[in-house]
Image 1 (cartoon, helix red, strand yellow):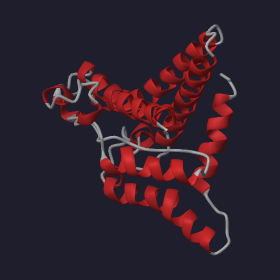
Image 2: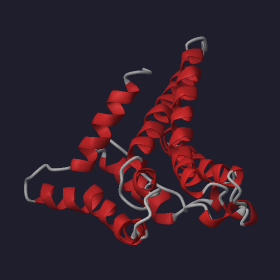
Image 3: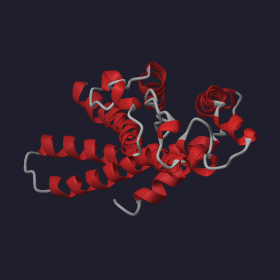
Image 4: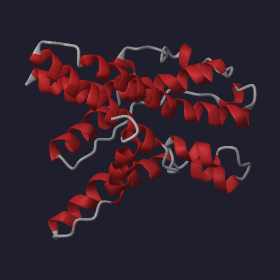
Length: 218
């Protein structure tokens, strides 16, 4: 039971925490030390955990066995006014989390090739499942965060450089955007399934995109 929990949940935690660290370090290199001052440039997961996004939502999706798992950590604090080149650095910082997840997926795939040399069957199967989950969960997190819905990174990458009050209002609608994501990811599919309709657009997008990008590795 403990091994099963570790190989299934630990990759999610690693992917989420390092995603946020990617944002924090990118911001630091761009001139903003806010995350460092708040001690968020840390590998300690307790500093990054969001009860809903890091624990509750992933567990619900894992137990529901719907085919994908998403989650998020507490966003690292970023002060965009400290950036040396605000428009450029905003895109770089927003992209950093996604790039970290892609790098973790590629790195995990490399380690997966080395697991074939392990002779112990139990250790080999456990590490294989862990690394396969690392590949899958990191790609899931990357394609999920690429969506142009605030507060996801895709919204800042696509619209962050535009000087428009309407666009800035959209980017600042983080609570509304998160409520919308939870609705289409969990509530809407559950309601429709109760009435006999299987409709899950977010799940379809994530599964299809993950399978497509994973096919280049595995």
